[in-house]
Structure formats: structure tokens, C-alpha cells
Image 1 (spheres, rainbow over the protein chains, first blue to last red):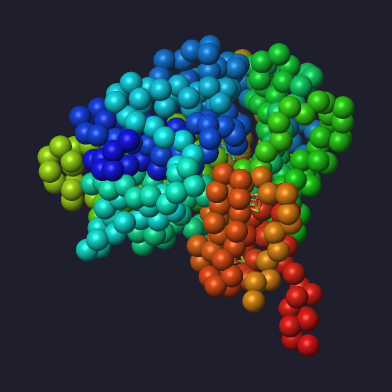
Image 2 (cartoon, rainbow over the protein chains, first blue to last red):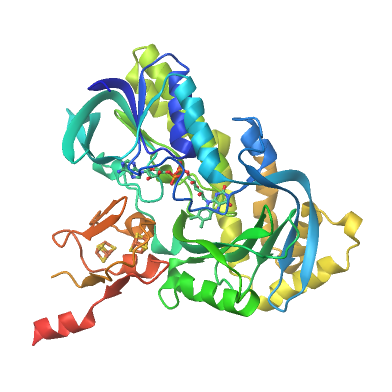
Length: 389
Length: 67
Ligand SMILES: Cc1cc2nc3c(=O)[nH]c(=O)nc-3n(C[C@H](O)[C@H](O)[C@H](O)COP(=O)(O)OP(=O)(O)OC[C@H]3O[C@@H](n4cnc5c(N)ncnc54)[C@H](O)[C@@H]3O)c2cc1C
Ligand code: SF4
Ligand code: SF4
């Protein structure tokens, strides 16, 4: 370990590993600091991704893929279950291994990695971030850099120390609890989503199947709901009603920052990527692939800036992100507000309408049409999603 | 005066509370959580965001103080 690098990446999740890799690909020196003992653990995630999404970064491999998904099921508040085939397949990952593989990929490009290094401050000189202060092996230390990449997840604080507003409205925080349970008898190629005010108000409840009859079962609720009833209460209720005897292999809490991207994700000497930048798709809550995309764009720009000896170039990252995904997320955010606020009756009538469509004619497009019929104001926003490609 | 209590040994270190705290008053390590009473305004946003009821707004402490 040196005392100075071109780039310091803080956080060893998917966004951090990809930022580190793409910066290193430009031929600059990169170190990644992770506070936990292990990369990829604990897993605070439902682990669902689209196949196309991860293929941009890594070849799908059974080592980190638990199951392959080709349908999703929507269960409305009155218990009506409709199954809809997906045009594109997806995976449920083993993130414990997936995150490791991504870090190893970064390492293969020359990135150094240190775990148990907790960053607790920034070195700022003349208004520019010039490195980090961190705790390692019980000692307070410093490390200098040309650029810091904050990939420190939902709990991100690093951007704040550089003067960027990073905290989000408590109503936009989806507070999640999830168990990974055994003996769950569901179809292993279907994602299950439950809606309604009794199971997951202002959010959704999921069952994502994993190998050998196990599954990730969990939900997210907005902080506005959490004010009255915690996420955990809803999960306990669901489990005791549906799977009272299922052995619980893991139980976690977690947060999905379901807001649009922060107004500002770069400043002199620093950029933010992944959950730290709030790059999660606010509609689905998926942040693995979008965080990797943020990391790729950010890491590449940072690498270029250092190589060209033009550090101002990092400030072009905001625009590059907005164009690839940021603007689309704004529309997703508005669709989320509509969908999460549908009444139980609306969810029921949408499910009933879909159940009348023959299986071979069911598609995501058709489901949207039916949802639109029930809530015409969605139309404008959905139209925009297809216009901004 | 800090009115937010952290129930001992209950925290899962998930970071929801840190993500919503407007004052950057919460410090979260791998297995350690602390609230800085000099920064905290007792706004309770962290309490509402915690998925597993680790944080509590302690009303009694407020009442006792005002006595
Ligand atoms: C319950 C739940 C279910 C989810 N389900 C899905 C899903 O099915 N599909 C999907 O795509 N997304 C899902 N997500 C979202 C997804 O998990 C995140 O968007 C994704 O992990 C973000 O990656 P990241 O690299 O930005 O952050 P993270 O993966 O959170 O990594 C951040 C890293 O930074 C480290 N760190 C933090 N602070 C410091 C510090 N000060 N010093 C050093 N290191 C630090 C942390 O320890 C952590 O390892 C889910 C989230 C939750 C909570
Ligand atoms: S009460 Fe408000 S200021 Fe205090 S720690 Fe919680 S969120 Fe931060
Ligand atoms: S939100 Fe709750 S469980 Fe999560 S870190 Fe904060 S206090 Fe701990």
C-alpha cells in the first residue's frame, strides 16, 4: 500500500468495483477501500438483475447465478395471481460471490483492494478533495489522491464532507427487511410481487426464488409508512401467515434510496457513484446494474481526466450520467409515485383485467396498457420513457 | 439534549438512518453505531426510516428535562 494514488475508491460494492476497474483501464493507479471485513458480505439485496444488464460487465456464470427468471407474477390485494412472461430473461444472483467476482475483475486491471479500512474524513485543500482520512488496524491514517470516488452505498457520508447534499427525504427511503428462507415452494423461474396496503403500503413485497427451494422474501416501505409501522412488522406478519415453519437462513435490514439521482454528483476532486449518488432505478428499486453503469461512466471519466492532466474533466460526469440513465430515472420516479399510490381496488381491477388476457398474449406492454386504462395519467410518463431511449 | 435512543444489540448496520439524516449526525461502522449529540436536532427522521425499530424517540427524557 502506498500513501498516494491517482484514484481512491471508497466502498467495494458493484459500483465501487466497476468505477475502480474502468479508471484502472485508463492506466492510472487505483486503490479501493472497504470498511467491512469481506467484499460482498453482508448481502443486503433481493439479488434480481436483468441478463442484458450484467452482460455489459461480466459473462454470466453459474458460479454467481442462483436461478434464471423468465416470468413475473403479480399478486393483487384480493389474492388474484397473474403470471406475465418476460421478454428478456433475468437472474437471481449469489451476490456474496458476484461482488467478489467484480472486485477480482477490478484487481485483474491492477486495482489494489483493502478491507477493514473505514474512511472517516476527507483531505480538502483550496476547495479541492485531495485524499481521505481512514481508520485501519486501529490507527488513524491518511492517503492522498488526485480524485476520490465515493461508492459508499446507501449510508454514504463522503459526498457531504465535500459539500454535496446527499441525504434524501425520509419518504424516498424504502426501508427493507428480508429473509432468505428454505423450503419455499414457489416456481424457480418466477419473480413474485405482492401489492396492497396490508402487505407493503407505498412499496411492494417480493419473493425471489433461489436454488434448492430457497428464496429471498422481503419488502420495502417508505419512511412515511415506517413512521407508523416498521418494515419488520409487515415481514413478520407475512411470514407467519404464509410460511410459519420455514427455516430462516439469513435475516437482514437494508435501505433502498428510491429517489432520483442527486442534483450534483461531482465536485473538485470527487465524484459519487452507485447508491451514494442515488443512482437506483426509483421504480423497481434495482440498483446493482444502474450502480455499475454509474461506476463505469464515472471511472472512465476520472481515468481520462487524470491521463489528460485535466481534472476539470471529471465535472462532465453529471451530464454523461443524466444522458445515459439519470433523465430516465426522473420519469421512473414519477411512475413510482403513481403506482405506489394506487388503491387496493385499482390493483385488484388491474389483476382481474390481466387474468382475462390469454397467457400467450400477456406481455409487459399489455400490462402497462391495462394499468393505463385504470390510471390514464400514467400515459404521459410512460410515453416519455419510450421517447428517451 | 439527545432524545434519540439506540436500543443496544439490535442494530443491523444497514444505513437507512444515515441516508436520511439531514445533519450527518450518525456514524456507522461495520458493527458500531453512534449519534453525535452536538449535531443531532432530534428530528426523528432516522427513527421513521429504521426498518427494525432500533431507534426510539425518548419522550420521557424530554418531560423530565422540562420539569
Ligand atoms: C433489501 C434490498 C433488496 C434489494 N434488491 C435488489 C434487487 O433485487 N436488484 C437490484 O438491482 N438491486 C437491489 N437492491 C439495491 C442494491 O442492493 C444496491 O443498489 C446496490 O448494492 C448498490 O451498490 P453500491 O456499490 O452503490 O453500494 P453497496 O453495494 O451498498 O456498497 C457500498 C460499500 O461501501 C462500503 N462503505 C460504506 N461506507 C464506507 C466507509 N466510510 N469507508 C469504507 N467503506 C464504506 C460498505 O461497507 C459497502 O460495502 C436492494 C437493496 C436492498 C436493501
Ligand atoms: S434525529 Fe434527525 S438529526 Fe438526529 S440523528 Fe436522527 S435524523 Fe439525524
Ligand atoms: S436504520 Fe436501524 S438497523 Fe439500520 S443502521 Fe440505522 S439503527 Fe441500525
